[in-house]
Amino acid sequence: MSDESKLEQTKGNLKETFGNAFDYEELEKEGKREKSSSKLKEVAENSKDKVNAFIDNLKK
Image (cartoon, rainbow, N blue to C red; front, side, top):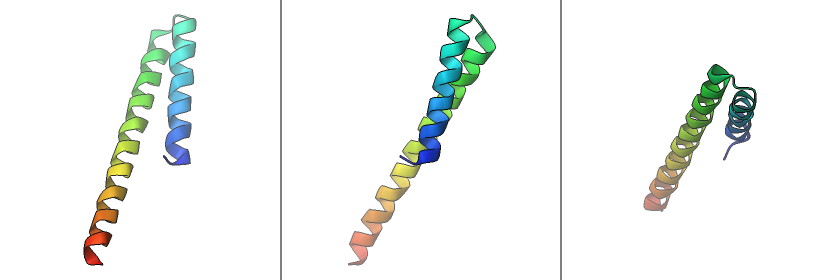
């Protein structure tokens, strides 16, 4: 996981938590979106790395 993805997930989690704690729905929703988006980016990055590693192994 990249540091950027981890930071985005943490930021989204904080927004979601504060939004929930202070009954601020918009902030909570924004946090959930950021968290989901960064997780999706992480999955895409990991998939790309695995495909590239597989291709490199085929070339050998």
